Figure (tube, rainbow, N blue to C red):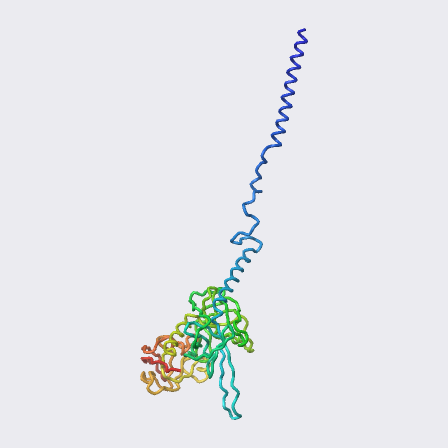
Length: 386
């Protein structure tokens, strides 16, 4: 009886243990099957938005270039739209010459220009209008209007024209001193005189360039650009991305064979343009200092050929009667080597050195006369109007 009771107790304990074990297994299965998944390892977590190019475009797949290029293209388009209505084609006629064989035909010349005032003032190059008898401008929409020359300055290669009536647009002259190499610029003009408002884009290659004109003086402080400047572009604007005129296109360079040097064009800085144009509009000409001599430049080759005592300077060929030079005591055969303490040489041509001073200013001339070096004081006059 006792043995039977012990067996029943053992059976009950075993049954309870098995029940608890089964319940634990089932509970474990339920928990496992309904639990929240574990967080991914930190290395596998993706930041919000990854996979889309950020606003800065800093991705390795070139998005940054695409974003910046789009912005530049938009700025170029807006700048062109802003300035183009003020760009004109300048067309002139140079009368034929009477020769031994008869009269030569009239010659038609063309260039570009830009309107800078509601009063119809247009800036272009002097070489575009020099010698012309009749001038017209062609606006961007193809309409033509007669223009008159207000004044010119051959040393700066600038001219101001004027048309009557309402103008289709006015360009703003910017600050050329703020230009930096690498900055995007736009040249607008009429290459070959036939393709109005042609746009070419490039960069500022350099500023402050000096270029020998071959006419006894240097054009100073020019903007060098690789924006294509062709025949007919002369006088047209060089524009920055703000739609401001920062230069007036003036020169293309040719190599020894006469071919155009690609990617090498020059523009007159807008700050120079502004100063010259203001004088021309106000008085019809640019006030320049006047000495009153005919002269011949001296360089090392000429000095060696003629046995001159100096390598650089200017030889006084003739002194104008009543001129500042005559009043100061300059004579035929004198050699001027310095003006106002600045030596005359390949870096400081005579005309440029003289033009660093103003009419009415008293300056010292260093002069070689025979075997002597003397100093003369001269009060500069004003250059006669062209």
